[in-house]
Length: 185
Ligand SMILES: CC(C)(COP(=O)(O)OP(=O)(O)OC[C@H]1O[C@@H](n2cnc3c(N)ncnc32)[C@H](O)[C@@H]1OP(=O)(O)O)[C@@H](O)C(=O)NCCC(=O)NCCS
Image 1: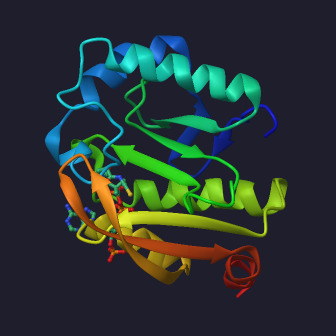
Image 2: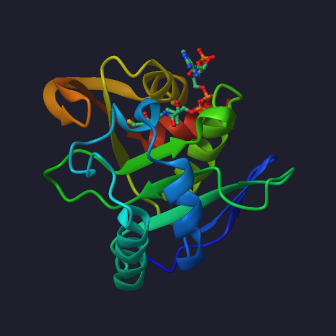
């Protein structure tokens, strides 16, 4: 992937994750209501150096062009990040190309839908990717709604390992053609 660009939406700035974000991530991220539906590869209980390790891996993945990791910063403040959204190419196996989380106090305001639409525009317009594979735990209603509202098609239901335990995981496909047609309509 090319160097992670700064992206904007009406209410948000999405900028590449940087080293100084670790302290804020360590404070905002390790909450049960945030991690419970995320992939079980996230260490739980979250270690004291969890965010520092995570940020190091983000910087390495971005330097190698493997993934993009954006800090989500609201234009109206606070000045530091309130969540993260990531994007990576289709590896042909894992059927997953995007991840996101938002601190609890900022949820339910349509902010992640806004961030997801902007990152999708980047993937389809700038990178010219033909599709995005997306996943969520079946009971993760807010995440599921974002896929539905973006026009993704549910293509599979598998069993996933989440921080909160093993359970059904939905697999969605969002095509460039469909998404662009919806934008034009
Ligand atoms: C998933 C997540 C990022 C959604 O962020 P958000 O900014 O709150 O989402 P939005 O405000 O854009 O809302 C998306 C939809 O979920 C609904 N929603 C939001 N919070 C909700 C809640 N607590 N309970 C039920 N529905 C909720 C919204 O009403 C909206 O649905 P609608 O289109 O029918 O109105 C956020 O809930 C989160 O960080 N969860 C923990 C981490 C996570 O699960 N990440 C995704 C892993 S696949």
